[in-house]
Amino acid sequence: MKVSWSRIRRIGRKHLAGILAGVAVVVLVQFGLLDAQEHWSLAQLFELRGSREPMPQIVIVTIDESTFTEMNEQWPFARARHAELLMQLAAGKPRLIGIDLIFDAPSSRGPKDDDAFGKAIAFAGNVVLGAAYTKDIQPYTRRETFNFPILVLRRGAAAVAPVNMHADADGDVRRVPLMVTPEQLAPMPAFDTTLHRLLAKSGFPVAPLPTSPSILINFRGGRTTYPWVSYHRVVRGEIPSEHWKDKIVLIGPTSPILHDQFPTAFAPAGDMPGVEIHANALETLVRGNPIREVPQPVSTALAVVAGFLGCALVVRLHAFRALLAATGLWLILTLAAYAGFVLMDVWMRGMAGTWALVLGYGGTVVEHFVREQRERRQLSRFFSPAVVKEVVRHKDEGSLTTSRRLVTVLFSDIRGFTSLSEQLQPEQVEEILREYLTEMTEIVYKHDGAIDKFIGDCVMALYNVPLEDPEHAVKAVRTALEFQERTLAVSKRWEEKLGIAIRNGVGINTGEAVVGTLGSRQLLQYTAIGDTINLGARLESITKDYKSNIIISESTYVLVKDQFVTKELGDVTVKGKSQPVKIYAVLPTSLDPEWAPTVAEYLSTRAK
Image 1 (spheres, rainbow, N blue to C red):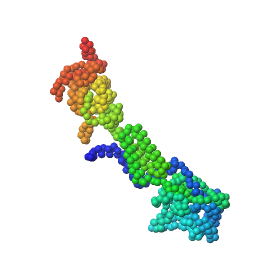
Image 2: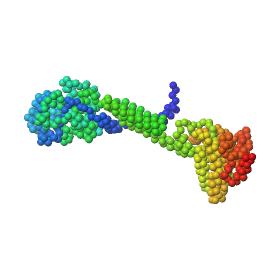
Image 3: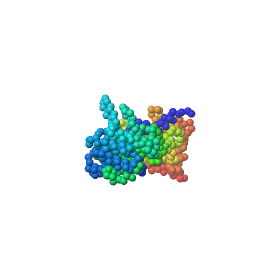
Image 4: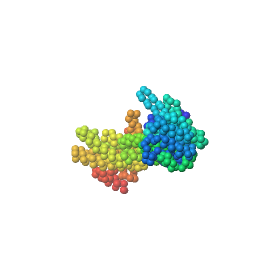
């Protein structure tokens, strides 16, 4: 199949905004400039989806404000107090206990405090202690460490794992790592991964761990989505032991004064406790339903397609329909993103597609508007505002393409203008011409004609272009009659001002001509050429010889004879024509007093 490069270039020009929109979105995505908006859209999806019922097995023991008030202790609490907590929990035989606290230094209260806590950890037998991964990056050094619990505590623990939160660039926590992988240290399973492994080992049904290095947390909700039990109530034995049977108990601070709170999708104010984030992450791993992100190349490709479609809608549809279609397309994309998120836990980065659609659609609208305004300015040189509006509206119908068509051409000039101009100053000539041609242009436009050109004082006008007009010949004659009337008014003003009188002659012919945008590569003009045009010019030149202000050809006469008073002038041989041409005068019944006797005589003759 032969490729038409001109057709490809033409399509490319029409869809340039869509192509540029796609390129822009690719650049924005590659440099992460849409990440903030995409993260916002993810938060909106969570909000629209709403909270979901959490696993009943997960319970959070909170170190909250009421605990500080009721226990009347300063932080950090005595580790013997933590031992009391564990003993109360262990009595209820929970399945697993995770502590989101760091005990990397001996207690300030002495070894007995640590021993009591260590014995309680060993007695429970299912406690996962928290560790902290830290890194200190200096200009020439990089220091990474794991801050583990002291030996007396960790030797009785079921496991030790880092509890660090991993926030995105904007500070929000959306992901949880499955492995903590320092550059200088051996990798270590993260806290939630470790809890998942121990649950599986205990026989609790869990989904397989994902193979990715991190997952997007499928948050069940905001604060207190999981049941909270205050630390002091457990220590005091206010909670029955059976409450903890087979529970997964997570212990951690929820009071703001302990600075372990983070912004999340359900907590944009930054008040989601770290321990509850771990609860959400653990349930995500247990259920095996992390938020799955559509691969970036796929979402980017969809965005590029959206941008191209936004452009194509404007190119192929009228403005209002294009707007409706673009809005509909955006709604489809939005609903698809929402449905995928709610039904399949799939996150499609929708902002890239939205921006591509907006840029493709908006850019094409702006480009079309600019081009249309340029076309209007160009067309207004030839056509009336009403015709320009119609031409622009029907431009897809090829009204301005070069073709052979039936036209009526009108030529008009000021009689004796050359000798008249010799009597005047150039400025006066310019002033007369400007006033005269302005008046004539208004008349042509009034009757839906097109100004082809001005040749000095000569006006060339076309009718039945660029749009079909069955009244073209009639409108041309009406233009000629009004020319006479307006010329008399202009002449009267200049007679009073300079003592000069002006008259004009008009020649009109109807026939086929080649009409369109013609000229050189450097200069194009909308015009008409052919024998029809030449004859129209010849008829105007003989008006003085026949002492007639308006002369029309037989082809025009046939179309207007029932609407105007005309007089046959006979046959005339004009330059460029081998056969004589029958011509007629159009009589102005009420315009010029000097014509009144002639018109009266002619009308009385016709009546007989």
